[in-house]
Image 1 (cartoon, rainbow, N blue to C red):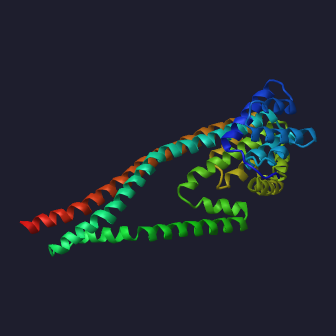
Image 2 (image 1 turned 60 degrees about the vertical axis):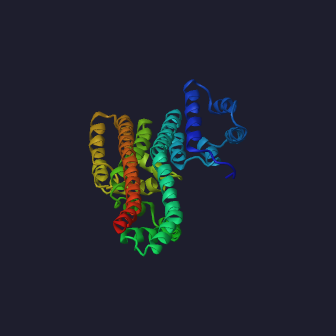
Image 3 (image 1 turned 135 degrees about the vertical axis):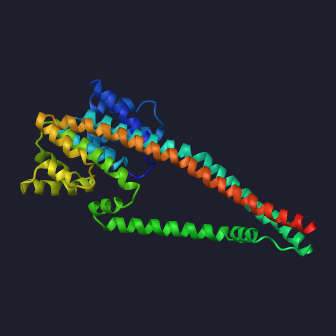
Length: 345
């Protein structure tokens, strides 16, 4: 795999969307890549030239894009479609997935940007006040033989410890992240998903995302004319999706043991409960592949709506936290003044 500058999710999504549109117009894959090389940044032109060269040498699209370090979710989807599926459909769906992901990320950053900036300003003012202004009050109170209020003394001691607390928090965060990554690398994908499903917020959204991925992948294979067992066999051989590879093998074995596919899906905690009903309905009308693809689009819209609700909550929570900080800061400043006025009277 070639090292160098990586494509962002936005750049990957834009590229795949344009590629999908060219494929819709009837262009061959190498010809479409050759067209997309025009009017790009130099490093993107170099990357597309490498992709074009790989295609000319007989590599598949997912292998060529893997060398450019594209998203593993997209690569896995493309590998499935190149074996038994619609490549154009997979390219477009991969583009939509990356663009939606980037859109949600940008909305979250936009919602959090101003509160975080305001928090930094308030924290700076608070630090300056307690580092520069409060010492003058201390000397004045010492000359007047007046003690600071207890609340203000506590706030001063906290502000003095902020650098240490910040360093402690940063060290804890880095250590926890390193430990999390080390543990997650050692356990199986299924165990990893099981652990994530124990987190309250994650367990509400993760099954939706997993079900969306599974529905669109399996649906695209079934739409191409494969039986469920054959589609699961292809999922089992996918080199990019470790979780679905393992689960597809388990599902295949359960089918051999005589279980119905809808019952197998219904007992999986990482799928939404409605998936089994979609499978029953799709099998009854002989359009399971199309119904799974349609259902995946519904799930994607639902996931986007759910994420949007979480993003809406971020800004008020941050503003509330900042408001409490400002209130505490002013109270700690006003209390000494009130005490000094009482002593003068």
